[in-house]
Image 1 (cartoon, rainbow, N blue to C red):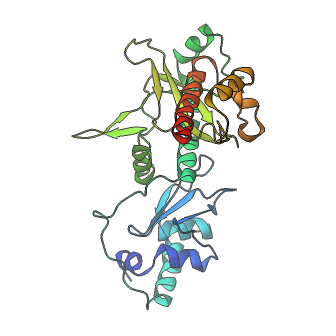
Image 2: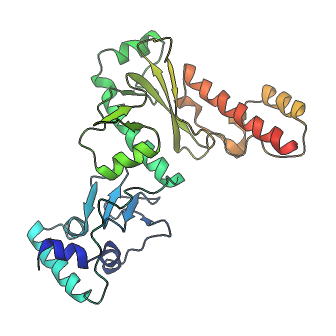
Image 3: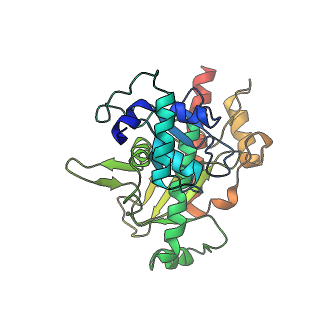
Amino acid sequence: MEISEIKQRLSMEAVLRHYGLQMDRHQRLCCPFHDDSTPSMQVYPKTNTYCCFSANCTAGTGDVIQFIQLKENCTKREALVKATTLAEHNSHAPVIAQQHKAAKLFVESSPLEKIAVLTKVFSYFTRALPLSEKAIPYLQGRGIDHKQHEVGYNSGDWHHKRERHFINSCVSLYLLKAKPVKGYSVWARDCVLFPLKSSDNKIVSLYGRSIADNKDSRHFYLPDLEDLYPGYPHLLPLNLSQRKASSMQRPCCNSKRSRINTRSLDCTARTALHRSISKQSSTYRSYRK
């Protein structure tokens, strides 16, 4: 049986079922190749491939044969033999159409996928920081010790040679923008990056500060900050003036309902927090009306 025929007859779903693994309704599952507490592996039935978005995993993107090779810890030849056997046992299943070019290569970003992608991207930024000759002096000039805080640096080349599904997810989150001819424009290039976290200490957004001090583009925010302060202001029957007074007397990060790791947010990064509060205050006013 040819490799192309194996891939047509053997679906990712059948392979997962063989190993006792099951996707959720969003075609996600906990990655079997690393310690995974939240589903970080995305399966793409239309292209019959998978992609793990975790920064702690080397599985990357692959097809049914690569999945079997990783799962069995064997050679590619042995994986092909195993895949052939599974394809023959799965001969009653419909043949997977060759629609790779027309298939959508990523789904609309879900909260879990967003967290997985941002966590993986930020791991690239943290590794790039010590290699930069200008980022660390910039932080030191601002009184920020990069060894004591979560901070990274975006050199602009982190996306080179990455898996296509991962790249497409980065595009959907506005970390990358496809150029008309070839390549990608990179969000917050030449910036020091700070993670913005939710109440359960997950990275839900990023803040970038240009180290070039360009007056036109000094601060960079990803579009969606709505998860930054979940449940704050809480929609209780209090008037807006009471709520403003309450927020001035007690920082919202002290609330048990919306506790956040503020140690990772230094200097101008907190501007993003205030913008988030203002946004949710607007939501509250709309609610009151």
